[in-house]
Length: 399
Image (cartoon, rainbow, N blue to C red; front, side):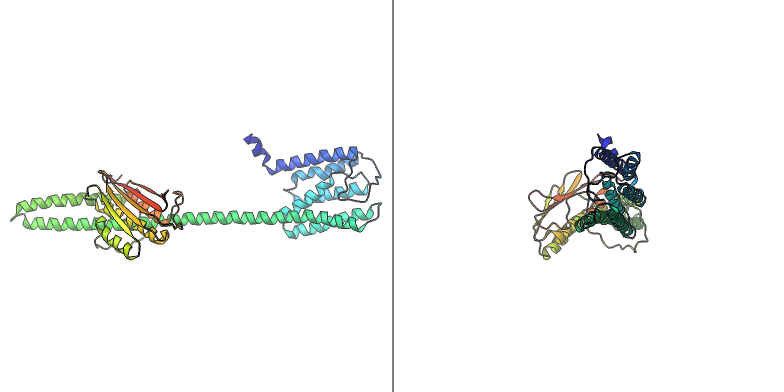
């Protein structure tokens, strides 16, 4: 069934079926003398019965319609000439004349007006010639009827051409917008990765500075205070491991542009959450923070990313939620850190619950969560508002 539908959807197959149906109808109508007054008009006078020439002229009015979309002007020329000869020779009027109207419609539908307007005028002239040389006198209502019929075929085809052109333009515009959206999203991801790389670089640089300082101190006191010097080695080892983990993570991020000089200012973490919450409250948003579980010492890179995730979620609340109440939950679950940011805002602009179409803020959060092998869920709450849930493993090793 699917193959049949696919076959019937092809224009050549459709036109072949139309030509075959019109041919059969025309031949049967001509043999049985079914009266058709389109478009030649002029009464019921018949000068000659249907013979081989008449059959050939009927076929020339119908069978070329198979190629009407490939060569509209040629098909219209053949069909119109055959109709003219068939009518002037006095054969019984047949359904084949509908082929002339379909051919005229096709020219108007598939060629621009520089071609279709002259073709329409020429077709109208041929119809008037058929009326003029007929044995019946030309009546005004006949002329008006022929003008309406020929004009309707042309205007319907021209309207179809205009609509098809608009549809093609809309498809092209949609494709260009989709490509532009993909480029913007890729640029946003690359930019967010550069920001993450710069921040992780700051963490590593800070740890290396600590190692150098501790090593220098141990070198100075190893002779006078050997026990303190040995204790300093433990600090150096722990700091070095943290720096190594962050450096491995950093190597997985490609930096495509020369970065601005990095600063060694202390990076924020969850310990700075109170400052961030204070800023949100000053902006007029009621907010509550809950800490669940036993606090744990976090690697600097993960601590920084956790803070940025909360910060981005709260920024989205300020931008899109409208009047809202916010609750931030920081949950320590043994081997995982879970961040939940809930709000009951009614605003929906820019906060799409469809994960297949993330916003730029979502892209940043996903990059940060993905860097540590975590999971991020964003979407509308059943009770109203919005929820952001980030789950970060505390023991994830870089790949």
